[in-house]
Image (cartoon, rainbow, N blue to C red; front, side):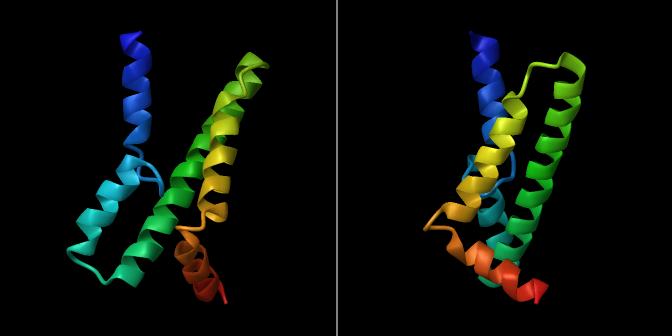
Amino acid sequence: MSLVMLVVGVFNLLPIIGLDGGDILKIILSGRFKMQTVNIILFSISLIAIFSILLFGFFVLTDTKSNISLILMGIYLILSILLSKKQKNYCKIHRNIVK
């Protein structure tokens, strides 16, 4: 049981928007950069981390042929970032950069 709690705690420290690691990174970066820059950096790091989770999930899926938990977690994290009313600024900033 303690191993499960440790894994959940470490996962929660990932630098992804909506997780505690994302909040910690936002606080650290806000001391050095403007808030718009912090949002851009945090959104980019979140996408890289989620892409890594999805990639690792596909490797696990091809190896075990049955474990899709990391893929589902990656999809959940993407949807939580994009659909969250509270975090819409990240998406708007990202769209402005891409244009």
